[in-house]
Amino acid sequence: MACGCGRVHFRAVNTSSLPPLSAFDAAIVDLDGTLVDTLGDFTETLARTLADLGLPAIAPQAVEHRVGKGTEHLLRSVLAHVLGPDRAGEAAALYEPAWARYHRHYPDVNGRFSVLYPGAAEGLAALQAAGLRLACLTNKPRDFAVALLQAKGIAGHFAAVFGGDSCERKKPDPLPILRTCEALGSVPARTLVVGDSSNDARAARAAGCPVVLVTYGYNHGEPVRGVDADGFVDRIGEIGG
Picture (tube, rainbow, N blue to C red):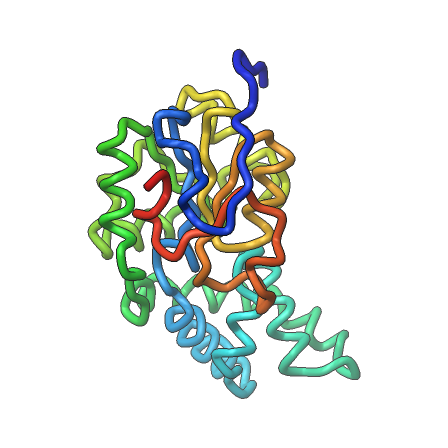
């Protein structure tokens, strides 16, 4: 994608050295772990799915470390965890039934066991008030993402929503970021990516977008401040503050 301006460079561990929001035309915001704490939704859906297969539930902490790379990765890694390395063949054989049951249960669970992070709605409103066009980009299936945004009352902030099934590849590949920039009519250098994990940061870096990570969220169980990002914030509303 062509870029008509130089990249905005900044590095910070707090918001004091971030550029003003006028440096950006748009923002691409992650969903799980960034706007909404969905660990309860994932844990409940997986418990129902595993029960259907005659398998034990998985602890929330083990689920948390597997969130963020899409449904396929989540299911395969959970089956491998529950069954263990000696039953890898059985885990592979159960993937398709698990996929079907997971997608049957998730619409009923979606949003019921999750909560907005403090300041998330206000942060989105502040980004909009600063003139940024917003899109939500997640590795969650798009239909699930749209329903969750609506359930939490924040769907109206977004001009577009893209899920893990919206492109041929998922984050950390840059393609979803680039496609979202196109939809927003913005160049990567003036499009801020807001996320909670190395997946978001790697995708943003490869696409040529500045990236800020929230200090809460999942990040696959690893410390988020160890990720190569341009800044870190405790609340989305602190960006550009």
